[in-house]
Image 1: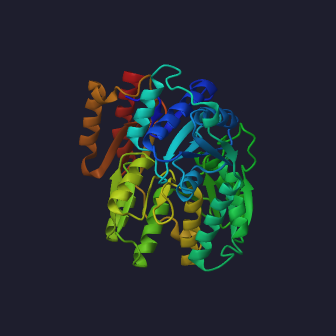
Image 2 (image 1 turned 45 degrees about the vertical axis):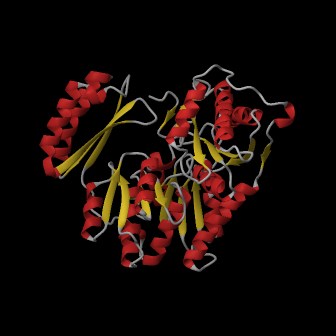
Length: 454
């Protein structure tokens, strides 16, 4: 069991687990790993962060550790997580690092590692870094003063990412301002999208009503963004916008609202995109990758059109791995974390925004008429706080209730139980043909988890 790295890097409360001392030690361990795995050239690291108060503190400590070992570091400043994936690959960096806790509250932060190919750092490398951190506080000798790495800030990195986004939309539509006459309401979660989404939309000709776009270090994800869509729904009614978009704190995911204020989740976006490409005979292979949390209604609609749904465990790295293995063009999660493999190596909320806008423009209809391409099965997800999230698989009472729920559901629904990758939570999800069947299967399992582990 790994102590620090979860499914999405190291995550914790700033100045609790994530202290400057820890970040410095982690930086040294990362640098040592790079020096051993890239012995034929001097490694280069690109670093970005979101808008949290603790971001700059952790970045300076992390960079101190990295450069102290003789590795060069470049800061891109406040950028979306997927920007680092793109820029690390395009700039031939050996590693990208993002300091962010995504959709978590401002007090949390995290350190994510992205390989030079733009994909999540391999598990085995993270395990080796874990092993180095478990050694003495100063396990590596410092190089001499003339071998210390350089650190610089390059604002051109973020500009390059902006230009790439604009190029994608203009190339696809053949127009410089394809959004002229379109009114977009956008909620940036007071996060990394705040400096990017409004600029991209304006440059493409849209009228923009901006919400939660003034980060102050403490308001990231605070009652806003993709985890609080009620704000975007209200904005749609207040502004009469044509389409609404909400990001999370690090802008790797996006969710939508139609002009009536109805929510459009990641399952709907993936289905709409896949169906459109299938109709154009450009969905090759005819496949969508999604997680075990995606709605059964999505699966049935895709299969009715001859499109296979390949399911993975929850987590964007598992989606990305399956997409690489199958050659799928699209994959993602209900939460709006979607990967378009022709465009990016990881989920990118801004690319999701552009791809969805392009599909909508193609259909030339109100967004509400195309944005709900299947009838979702009733679904409930309960997150149960627990003392220890690792013991549920072997607990007899929990397993007995899981077996009973699966017997009750049969072919009329499905059950998913899993531990959160970032918090001490057990997540229990049931979807079925009727709300009554959902509750009948869900409640006993949730209660069993609470009794056993809370």
